[in-house]
Length: 251
Image 1: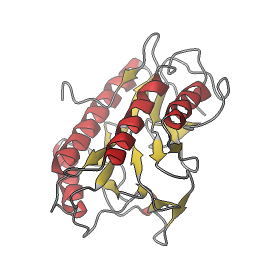
Image 2: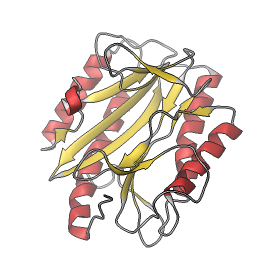
Image 3: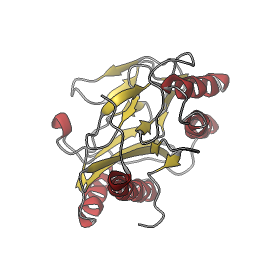
């Protein structure tokens, strides 16, 4: 069932999303050579808790950290640990915060020092594909209108969208209906209604869209070992333009 949020619920959700966005920004500021992924995760955890919130990901279906940190060919669900970031890495950080009964969810890929031109293009195209998609996050459109716009932009730029994992509704639960794929033909899926909140999250690979999950059951990597990037915000469907909730203004 797709859950429509009322104004009272949205006020709480906006607060959760602001905390989430600030945690993403903090993680991005820490991405530099010599910093461990575990250190970034601890800083994010401590920040979220300091805001009176809880990390959404910690122990979610057994996930052992507060942040998913995915480096280079890791697409999503990278587990923070002893890996020390190196010059030229690209680092995807996915974070969620639970506050006053609601979750926020967002992600971005950050450059570690000087990166290759291809890696920078991948980051830029992935982020822009999100904005191409939300042009269609308008009341009365359908979910796959967003999906089609993302896929078209990514493929026109020579990259591939991951198909095994998709965006989703978000609210009182971290994952709610509907699914929001980053691919597909326009004009399909649920119709968008005012009060829907969606985590729209293009995951984009340099090579094939195929991925594989490692033995830990979480870490998901590109099948061909090439780079991947990720960009996500929580978005509210309104009577007019969509509202990006995972912003830091007013925190």
